[in-house]
Length: 388
Ligand SMILES: *Cc1c(COP(=O)(O)O)cnc(C)c1O
Image (cartoon, rainbow, N blue to C red):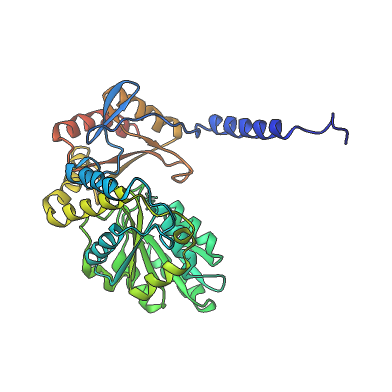
């Protein structure tokens, strides 16, 4: 080919990007970053306007708690702004030990390991435990990072109908015997639906079929409890994040010591990445200390969510997350826009985050929401529900 006829890769790259974006735009699936100033709990400043946020996962408002913030400042003053290396090199600053010891105690396990994020945790843990001769059985609505971890493991992956114990049993009965090990994956509280997994029933199936049950507790920890050591007997692999109710950042796994030691040696998203900044680890530990000491704080997000569901005659909230499913992307976006006009930030959630045809408003409630605001919010949402 003549140089003159050769396509210019800078051009083909850009035109690929433009066409892909135009396709998303046509389907109302294009996403945009919006500057959002969270300068106070439950406040979100956008475009010069302060909105009351019902879209943050900071369920206990701990990201702004003075003790949590002070812990970060002290850590920076002592250990600097960054960890400097992977934890297995020189990045394992002493704050990690306090955090992991506390997490293991709260969850009732021998040990814990902290990753850079929940996403990194799931993409590291799953391939560290199972491989190509093994089976993964997972809830169809499990978070994207569990699906990513499952794919990275090269194990056979099968999903079962959301929260359906019988469907899970059918999958295990049909397939389990053909594989070496089996990992059973679910979320404790589903991030886009707010419903709770049938953990006891799944634990029973796990025992019957020799499967290792792992729950992702991203949205339960700090809302349903501050860790409950009695769960350890049913759920040997308790994964979660420090970025939601804990208000900081990082992911974790709580499990038996040999399991955690294997993860330290095998999880690539633990080994080949820099340790968390000392400030983040210190904040998480300070926030967990507050969670341990304040059961009244932990009870509040669910109470707020239940006020909202009772005002709208919706099924009673099971967690701090309440979805209102509106179907088409455009309807969810229009409802979100209307609520913004009334001073509320409620993000519309669209496919592929949720299944096709189930675009929704996802409301999250925090300890600090005022009842009067929840009542006004319910008034704003009511017309959309009645048209659904
Ligand atoms: C948010 C979330 C994660 C990811 O956690 P990060 O710490 O934000 O990376 C994992 N699993 C579930 C269920 C989540 O909701």
